[in-house]
Amino acid sequence: MCEEHCAPFDAFADAFFAESPISVWKASRGFGGKSLMLATLGYVESTVLSANVNILGGSGEQSERVHKYTNRFWDGDTAPRDLLVNEPSERHTRLNNGGSIVCLNASQKSVRGEHPQRLRLDEADEMDLSIFDAAMGQTMEDTLRNKDVETQTVVSSTHQYSDGTMTEILRRASANGWPVFEWCYKECMTEWLTERAVERKRGTITAEMWRVEYELGEPSIGNRAILGEAVDAMFDRSLGEYEGAPGELIVMERPVWRCNEGDEMGIECVLPKGMTIPPVTIFGNRDGEGDMDALDDDSELAFDYSNHRALNTETTAPSQRAGDAGERAAHATTLVDALCQRHGLKGDWARYVTGCDFAKEQDWTIIATYRTDVRPYRLVAYVRLGRISWKLMTRALDARMEAYSGRTVYDQTGVGNVVRDYLRDNRRTASGMVLTGRNEDDMLTEYIAAVERGDYKSPFIRHAYTEHKYATMDAIYGSDHLPDTVCANALAHRATRRARRRFGVAG
Image (cartoon, rainbow, N blue to C red; front, side, top):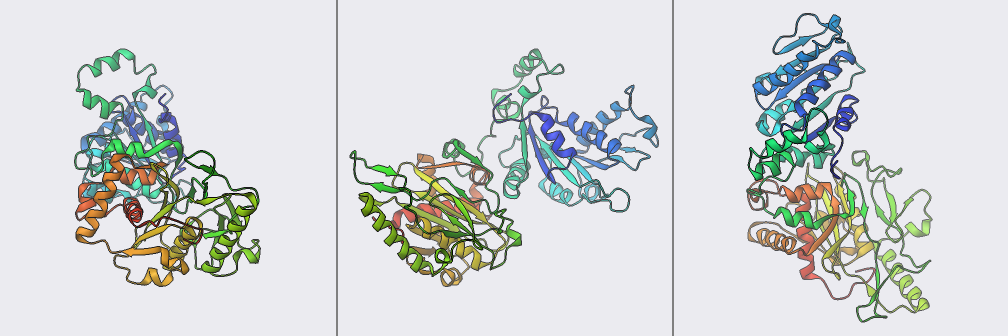
């Protein structure tokens, strides 16, 4: 079994038990067993759960092909044929328990018809995106007949086109937290798939087709804006793996004091016991779950970047919360100076830059902080927020600047002075940038060149990785939406040009 792949049954179980409302299956062409698994899934759901199941293929023929697999199951010795209302047709199977299986044509009219509890899409990469969008809103619970069956959608396909429907689906999966189950022919080497069959198939197709469609390699870059190899190198799984879900605060490294003693390169120190900075504020529910839709202006969770501890604001000592940003930063500076003197430390804080792309309406606010006194530049803190007030978004940026200091550049396009008015005393370390025309193009070009030179390193954050990997030239330089994480990172890169030589706790 491949290290990054799953067992196909994991995908089957997730869909059957509706553990996620939408799941994506990415598997080998022919040897992944996707169509047969979807047929088996629909058959079991209609008979066991009495569910209504719709099957939608990349074409009408593909839908019928999946339904034909289900028809074969009724010929088995143990098949529950007493459930059949009549013999299954090419496009319909009706059961007397209320369940059904219907295969749809790949058309707007067909997919906007019935409202099933379960929707199974096959070969989505061959489907027009408009058909996919029309189908996604069709699942609906049957509260009158079978209210215990939850809605669930499976999107299954081989990924073969760099700018096709599956690329967009994977981007949405990353943005919305849909699970992606991946497996290739190696996870299917059972009695039905033999080494001989695999080798015969390999000998009849091109090496590129085998790499992409059977071994799940990335489709040819096409019109992508960033070299795929550079993106893979930047997002290093050995540094950790994260989803980058909304509200998930990823802290890779607390603020570091860099000593100017020891060898000529200096020594990086973990601060001595008792040598900390005051807690700073990051926003989420009081239980730390991070459901961003549930927030109001009074919800906050203190986060101490110095030791990765979450502190409930109801139990944190008032002295730790009191005062504005300037007072807390001044207190931190005094505390660090005193403790460094006590422990005989000489040096300065490591250097950091932060980029922030603020959400406008339906996009995401991304705050990314990189350490820049090391090569390659290293991501130390990252968060994705959305659908919250300007006040909360700017407080989150204030919190990051209080913790890591350094220069910050944020996207000021279309927001006027809203952000600057909300930011607290850290405004002197932050500057807004209006992203239009040549100014924006130059910033993005400089950042992409830095990524392709290997100047940046990050843990594998699925949402950020996907936005970088599938960013098209039109998204970067044209009319499509500029990916939020690309924008935030490019703003951080622009901050490296403005970085001052010394950074203290308060900037």
